[in-house]
Length: 425
Image (cartoon, rainbow, N blue to C red; front, side, top):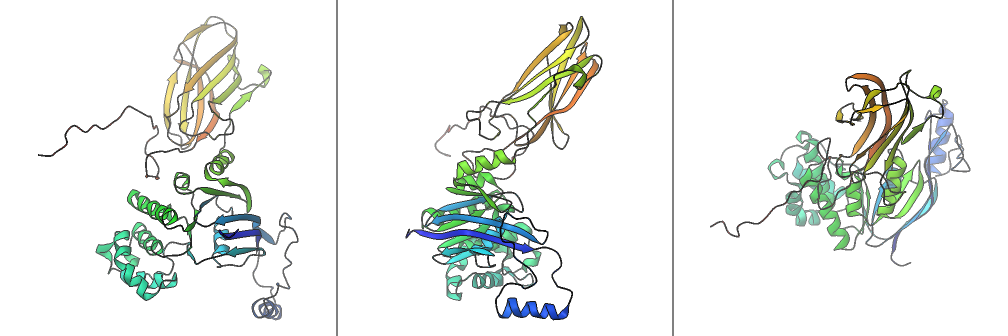
């Protein structure tokens, strides 16, 4: 279609593993002549026939990637480290060549793949604006016309004549993005630009990208591990894993699938016979289970999700006063809370317990649960350590702050502002 600005078909990229040279000068010269001068395939490295085929000499960074981007669309590309995101952007930006497949593009492309592209540490911020802008495709006249806007956007006016080697990482990235943000490409490619920066910087970046996409009709490819920012900015998504497309389409659907695939949850353990179960001569656990309350079964666990912990254990003593403590820990070992059941007199048999952690209470992160069974509320009968584990992903609305939310808990409490006076006089 005429509005397709990027078309990727059967794109694959393979890298050679191991030593670079052959070990023989004559063969190294033959390789240089064949690959550099004649632009033919390396005679000493045979490209695997199939991207799915494993090889000790080859690493497939991308495997048979197919997608189309239309004018004015904003695509978020997500995935774990090493998934192939940066490789894909470098191929689209024509920095590296694909091993197989083709990329068709229409329009001027500008890329911000590394913070400070074209910056020289010994030059001042003022000089680097001209240097980086020229490298990114702007003319000297264009840079001069937009110089004041770039400086104002960066927020480093006071340090403009200071060598950038003395800048903090935050100042460096602000100036680098300010230059790239004032280009006028048809396609803007951005890789992890929000990895460094404070709240004000993130707000400016997202606002600027949203402005050029929606008001000026430009196309954006945006790579980030900051999923709330990706969902806020992008309309379409592409999830890469080990160089392959796992999902593409609507950004909310793609992010949900990625989160579900990335979560590590130990949600249930059970034992048929007491002899096989964890415990001792007094207590043995029959079952522990974590039940999330989800509107859709395929949805990921996030901070809104209520979680019910259910458990059963065999009690081998009559007339015993038993209580159970459910203790929640973060994965760095910090105790988030410890809640105790009502102490109950129990006979020999199976004892069941249940506790619900409400939604909108915990912060995002990874957690594990330990259950402590006590006699007379003081004497330990058995400690079932790290019996359940789960991860909660972030979820935000009504904010443009996408950094880590402080605190172990994140409750929704009644909190509102009211206009009490209309004038200061």
